[in-house]
Length: 397
Image 1 (tube, rainbow, N blue to C red):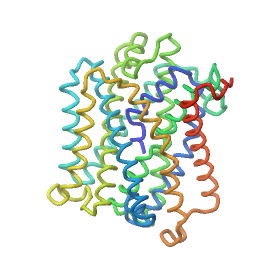
Image 2: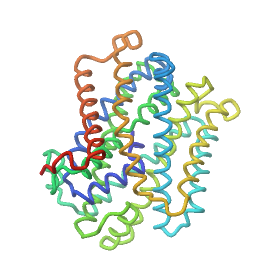
Image 3: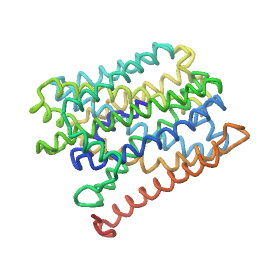
């Protein structure tokens, strides 16, 4: 769950704070129950079937819909991986490390962590990285925001100055897409299946998911606070690495370097989780052995897909003068746009009593989930309309 706060999330939340202050904190708070309910469904489905999300879509909806879902996932995953290495590139540049050296080394380390380790060793490594993410709370505390205003904006919806615009809609969809990421559905279900959890583990898996959602959303708020601090001191946002440098001018080098290191940490977490979701999904569909429990010699295709995703994304980022921040934000918007279709598959599977029996969705689950889907579709349609006809809707303030 904490891997949801990947490099794209750091960029998106920071930009939201830098452009609109704390006015969008209530959207992040609202996404806490949304994130939990969606991922809790994935937990139940993974335990009930012992299979990943891609395999279940192929099994229950047929080859065409399965292929549609897999292509969607692999495309967005690869583009998201590019954003992870884009963030590493930006952070290394600001730390004075040549990305031509640092990015390939990071890619090699990510491949080695997964290919040479057992599931348990990989899990302990990423849990440690998740705990490092708690440094965002220290960063927010040291920036000394007006906590009363933070609390007020988190619980009382407010409109930023300028009202509803195309830029605001674009950023809101990016926030939704990075908080409730489509790849996370596939990743967590495959993870549950690989770990071989059973319904006896459901209570603890739910608690695990809830704690992960809480850390994800509160850390996201801290990133938004960092962007707001930059805005308050009159800096213009270009990317989170430059924001860290700007913040360093009034806090000192410690906070600057900590933000840059947290960018890299977020990118590493995101890269390993996203690459695994791609490798698991492709392995499930191809019928290959696809488990972190297996050594490389027994799951070569699975590990090859993982390594290929990492290496290709790292290579693409090293193209000179690529618009990295635009790529990062654009991918989050794309994730937000395709999210409704991903949730529809999940919703239909969770109402399949043949699969889940007593663990299928309750009526209140369906009300919540269809409401989420309707809101996400509405946001996607508004974005599409504003891109196609910028003057179609008047600015609402």
